[in-house]
Image (cartoon, rainbow, N blue to C red):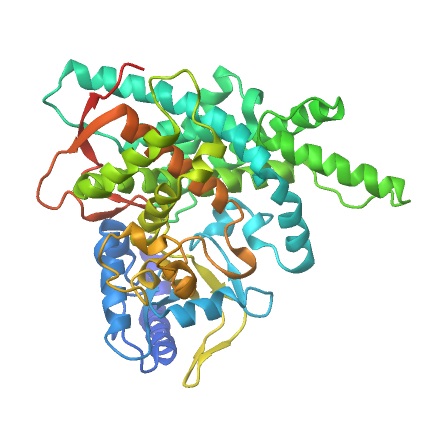
Length: 501
């Protein structure tokens, strides 16, 4: 052992000198990329500011936003685990990113380490004609007929969960109930049933829920892909979830080949795929397009990810904002009562929802003022000139803030004012560029009609069936990242039955 030490000891100064040289290069590279932009002057080696990001993401992103607003440039910088990041506050610059999603500009990644987590072959990583064709084939999943089918499913599940919430509340009427996890479970049940309907049995649903929880936890943890770490558990869970959904695709395809009536989203999708394939064969094309069951299972997981956490966030903020704006709540209840009574046996239909213009305005204002997914991360595939005096370096992770855009342009943007989305005010048309909660450009959310419909249905039924009151404490309505945003107290409320249904 001593002899080894004697052999190595002359090299030790060189080793530490080499390490110091690498650290110096890292700082020089960061400073060069940072240029004149607001952000940390120096960064911690390799890790950068990942610890503040993981331990208090709200404070971290608030600081990035404040830095971006501190100059006229509209963006700021930071450094996370060897990655240079750019945060964009300016709506116009965010649109510039959304409009340039292509191989030689920006790549949508969904998560700073999304390709490791979701896999290479994923809807959000697609470009060009292939991406356009897939979106075209997805469109029939969100027709009025399809949305009507989903509304029936959603309503049955929502009522089931409301009953369980009210039963729980009745046991301790003076104890508030935190709704975040309850809403998440309800949404997971709703998403699974809407997307893959009867193809998930009870045991599959249990395993699915466990794996989806692994995935959710891993999203907010350090990206350490080693056994025992949450990120590794999340990555493996995604693989199992996609495998499960692939089996559902195969079952649906067999059902649609028998020309049965669609009962869920995957049925509508497979029905349209079969129609296009048969039409192409009639016209002499043998293979118009080809998706494997595994690919379709991956796309279904994309839908689930997009619908699940963002929708949970929107439902929670709906409760918070309606509780703090009783005049809006009263107008919602009055409008719902014109079309539907919870005392009747008639279900609340998609056609009824389409007539509730004020309710739709409320839903849109909730999403504007509390955009569930506050940022849409992209990576710069090549250098890109963002402004006249700044070129984004290749490999930079870029975070356009759709949350910040919601507070630009609109009159009194901090005010919760659903009337801004009514036809008379026309603010939605005038300030359309600032409403970026569903993104923009070629990767704008393809399921936004479904998202609005689900939020409207929840609000209509929650306000008609339940009396609710927030449990107010200091900071309860502060924003918490989970990874979408939610009230800091997990939305604690007192619940009571409003009608006998």
